[in-house]
Image (cartoon, rainbow, N blue to C red):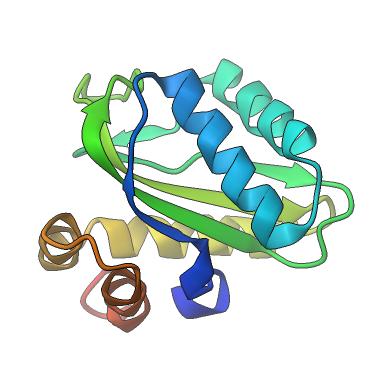
Length: 154
């Protein structure tokens, strides 16, 4: 599974401005609503509910908020690079500047977990993260995410 299957270039926000975790999640829900056609409030409530179980800040400035939604047809991602990192209550207590929001159909099961695993592998690739942090170009970010081979990101 390549990340290019999960995220379209229009679902990338290369220089997002947010002052808090809540505002960040609201902005991601807004972008996801424009990509999926689903109600922004429904998306926001779903990812906020998941965050209440425990932060999806995975460390190294990265967060992978996610949730399952009725009405979404396929697993879909939204990626944002923040202009200024925000506190996300991450496991390493570091602020977050790269966010990959993953939304899946309610019955996605194993595919949802495979997608999360793939995202985590790509976002662990130090070269890819350095390239993404060094650009504000959405097309470049999309290609960096899509081109990271699974073997390098393992």
